[in-house]
Image (cartoon, rainbow, N blue to C red; front, side):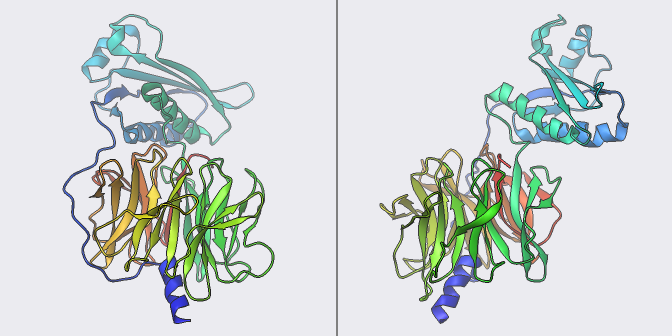
Length: 434
């Protein structure tokens, strides 16, 4: 029984003592090269309060583009005119792309947002074809969503890859004494709302590529894995199957193709092993079988490997293995407590946490270099990393126990943002698809 308790504590919460992990001076950078200057003169709007246009569109779009990476938003000393004769004045402000916006209401009452983007440096005062010309529509309250979509479309036009302004973060929040629910929030911290309302302990969310949710809930007493079998479908029990299953289950993780769930299965001796559930058939395959704790499975983008945490060699460390349990090898070599691995979207990096002086900091292991780099060095503990879809930022929780909040950071650790002022947060997952 003592071993069981220790095993469950290892799965659900980090222990509290450690020696120092390695300190690296090298700083990771997620982007390189000069930024493109983009100017956003105030929209020409009709039928909407100025305060609404400012707070739900102009400020949102400006922030989205500023945080996107390759843009430098030009905001001061803007010329009054936007016609071709004014282009040289815009160039002198550092502008390369000039984005003009018109917001109106259609005959049916819907919002219509028209944008045009001109490369004023290339135009040289001539009336040229816009780089981007696009119309967006939506109901009342859609301005924020449209602003996110514009930012993502401009990122795609400039870089060939969709931006992340429209993405969302799913996480756990303490909703009352002994109650945790799954929540969702926009990437910029707006529109937080619950996805579950079981009034029980509901934790460990994972999101499939098509938006299906899975999680662990104690609403029936013992922990079970619930989720969606089809996008937008009802929440149903996915595991364990009918009948008695020894031990508890934890930490589900959708495979990239959405057909399998890696999860942690405990036994009466306090050991936990990683198994893979074929969601359609209900068949389960055990990947680890050792007298220790194995937990925190995270898939690589190809669905051929998993990173996981194990104490098979003493203290917890990050290991890798094939999706059939073969070729197990240790990844982290320094520090006495490393865990919570999160494989990056490109497969080139793995984020994890390493404990130092009773708290955790974020590290990133670059597989091509075989090196780890420290990302956070804050006073509070930083835990539960999850990558943004564009691989430029990491969302995580930070704070004291019970006061953990959501933060994001770039890979240098220098651009840190509090996502939303909500206490009691844990286990964030960054996703495009919800």
